[in-house]
Structure formats: structure tokens, C-alpha cells
Length: 284
View 1 (tube, one colour):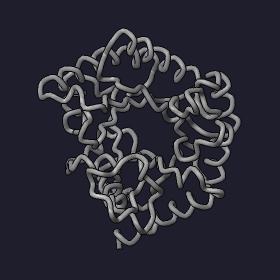
View 2 (cartoon, helix red, strand yellow):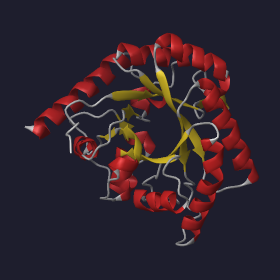
View 3 (tube, one colour):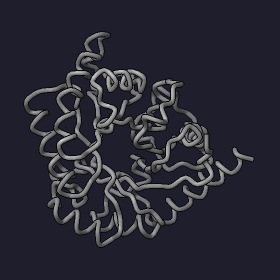
């Protein structure tokens, strides 16, 4: 199989720079040499849409901004609690899928229930299959991919990529659904399985705090990947690329220290250099 690890490409998730509006996000991505971005519907301040939140930007305007900047919107992040399927969730899925189609986005990220409920063996698999069955025609009719993102937290109802892959196969959804491999969540879940052929997106972030045990790690600890990284990002991504994954590596740090960067372009560029050098070292 061809080794693609020598030429990783990057994308920019809006969570990296939530203080920028959508046009600012697109412009920053281009200055960094990226042409793929992820926009979000969960960037809020005091319960109101933030200036980067898609709820504040009409879909047609998002499409125009992306076209003018020369970027592709690879996903909208996210339909939350997707595996607790209700009439309200169905309506939200249709609303987000319509926005995705009209904005030119290619996929909708699907985030599972993460509050300690729905974890029982049998129950969680049943709930997952029900949700995927219902989402399949909603996404397919709009030409969208559903990106299923297991979360590594111990309270999550979907921690395993293997379980997600089995559910996708159960609903014959391979033409509609793909996995998100998040390097943070992969580590927290303790899962050693990789599914490069079924992976549609990779989220990258690091954890630098040496005092944290893995079960103690939270989104607030997720920083840009550098020499302090405890998650083994370079090894994870290399495994995926060597296995045939040919999509982008999308920066998704949540830490406030990243959001407060005065020069995010410089910091993100440095992380890109570090990751590329790590690949070169591993390939030597």
C-alpha cells in the first residue's frame, strides 16, 4: 500500500479560533496554505450565537464567503446527541442537513450522548442503529456524509470506533457514513483499532499537562500539537495515512490558552511544522 504519510494536509476547525468570524476563519486557513475548513453551530457566548456560529450566517452567505476565499467547507460540527433519536432530533438533523447542502458543506459531524446515559450494553447499540437508520435517508437525499465521532470520555454512550463501524455495516450505510478519528478521543478510549478505510475525517489536538492522568483529560486541556504532546498524534496519524486515509488533519484544540493566542497564525504554522517533522523522523 502506498505510504502517504510524507505529505499530510491540514484543515482548520473553527474551534481553533472561535473569536474569528466565518470570513476571518476562511482567510486564516488560506494564509496557512489550507483550503479546507470546518464550521460549527456550537460557538456561543452567553447563550447567543457568536459571530463565528453558523446560526448567525445564512447558508448562502457561507457558500459565497467560502467560494470567494477559495476554501471548501468539509463539515458542519455538529448534530449533538445524535444517538438519542427523538422527533426534536430529527427536526434538528433536517435543519442542519439543509444548511449543509445550501452552504456547500460536504458532511455533518454526529456527536453522541455524553452525559452518562445510554451506556448499557444492548441499549447503546440499539440506539445507535436506530439513529443511523433514520439519518441515512436525510443525509443521502442531500448528498451529504455523516461523520460519526466516538468520544473517549468514560461517560460517553459511544466510545468505540469498532462499535460505530459495526453499526454502519448493520444499516448498510457505508455509502453515507464515515468515522471521525479524533486523536484525543482515541487515546482516552484506550482503543487500539484503526479504521483508515472507513475514516472520513481526522481531528488533531494535543495534551501537554504532565500531571493529568488520561481519565482526567477534558476538552479544556486540548492544545495544539507540539513536542510536549502526550497523545502520540504523530504515530496515530501515520498509522492512518499508511493504512490509506487520504483526507485532511483538522486542528481542533479547545483550550482557552489557544483561543487567547495573539498570533494564532504563527502558532498553528509552528504546529504544522512540528507534525511534518515528526513524520519525517518516523519515516527515517
